[in-house]
Image 1 (cartoon, rainbow, N blue to C red):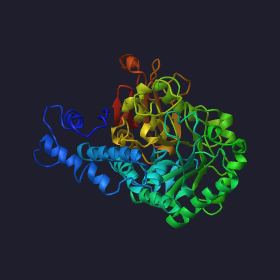
Image 2 (image 1 turned 90 degrees about the horizontal axis):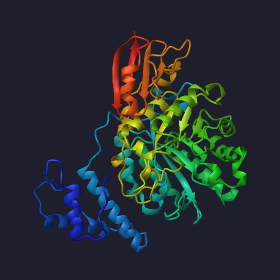
Image 3 (image 1 turned 135 degrees about the horizontal axis):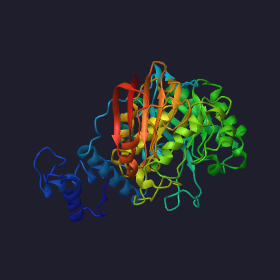
Image 4 (image 1 turned 180 degrees about the vertical axis):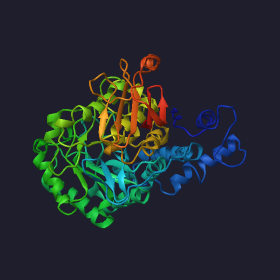
Length: 492
């Protein structure tokens, strides 16, 4: 994480480049060019054809008012700097979805077989593309694909009122896929060209008549017809309807009506109605899980400490399974990585102890637990409002898909699920100690995945007191950190 420079483009920005971009830990300076440079060289680059003046003169953001265009060019300049100086770490491979993504109660699958995949949230990416142009959002799509994500979640419209309680000090955005249908389809295709599929959702239906709602969902249908239904992995009627819909939209039947306008043409796509922020309420799950849904859509518990949030992912399927309307979950907006000192403040709202989630280890643990029976979405500040912080600088953005793509692809079919608590008849692998829990799933053939986690201050006590309850072999640690570790192996 860095602080961005002042607004002027003279001496102050050169000092910022020197101190923040070109100075490495060993004191050696590195530049954007392949030959030694001076401050004057850099000033020429910054102002020249490859830098700010180049952006301005070629018309970048020319559909924006001057002040907004100035800021847009500035943000794009920083993205270009980062792409050269801080390229994403090498990924183990994206493993794109092949054909249409499906779900059958035993996890997710595509035409290649069982799948464990991971999504990245990019809430206003489509909107920014519609307003600023396709080129503005391509770097973010490149970063997601390069990191190894298979799905991107984005809203296809947001019509927030100026006094909307979420957007606060942020400019109230207003956009819709209906503003520029051709550009909307170009954005969808650009992601597909990069091996990404879409989880689309309306960002809000409040104040909107049925006629316009129908037009939006009919355009999604047309996009599937032109680009192929497998372009969309998951279509959600409306994001968090309790905050974004009119009274009639709170009725599941109204959301079902909108989904059915698409589903009648493409029944094999995955669909859902809505989810509520941070809730595991069983009645809400039952009310908003339609008959055609293949999974429960959830936005996950955000209270407590990091290990409490992770524990709720496990208990939400292990303990609640008999009462869940479906055995699999899709976590669309779970707890996420957010900073109070960002340009818009803390964007992942209604969340406790956010500072603990700045450790990438917490996101890996959460994704592993969620993948036991569901599909995880990486959620973060630029994943809500796409601003001038590239995704790879966010803690956990690179580490999460690198971990998920190493998990057994048939993980959700591991039938035995449990934890390390002292329970009669439990086939636990290791014992729990205080707030440290070893949660696991075991395949019928003895292969297992165990996720052990807890507060860092109790780690040494756990290591001292935990017991191995069942012998194992072929053990491999997939990830480890202060909050815990993830391992695979086989029961001996």
